[in-house]
Length: 217
Image (cartoon, rainbow, N blue to C red; front, side, top):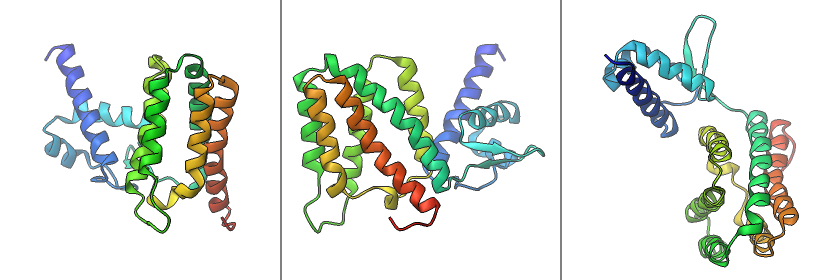
């Protein structure tokens, strides 16, 4: 097999395993049995081992000294650490895009988040969760900076392993925070836009730290 062919098998194995983990088909804490996975994915163990090594590098699995790979399990403290990284990167994103954002961009963001906000007493936050995810992703697409985009995508992907519905702060708290971000972006104010995003994400960090310490939240 050519080098390019071997590389494509490694990439296929990586993407396939990553999707199984992110989709919950391989659960947090579950051991990766290479024989079973090789048969399931239809690849040999050599590219599979390379894929698992890449998943360890990207934070999806841990490998023991005995060479056993296990899907990562995140506690509140580790989630909070990832949110710290996310806060800095997304704050920088707002700072960079604020001077050049067009009216159509902020109109989309405002419509996206306000139209998805649940009514008082509505406990179904699924639409709002999706709008929240798209809100942050959309800002990233406006960057035009592939390096920063890749860093953010990597952090968000790992967070998908651990973010349950209970970790989402109520829309009643976060809706105004999103609007504050949009207002700062609309004013083309990089300082206020960055600070608004930092404030938004760091409130979730405080929630995670409190849960880690078993303090009331």
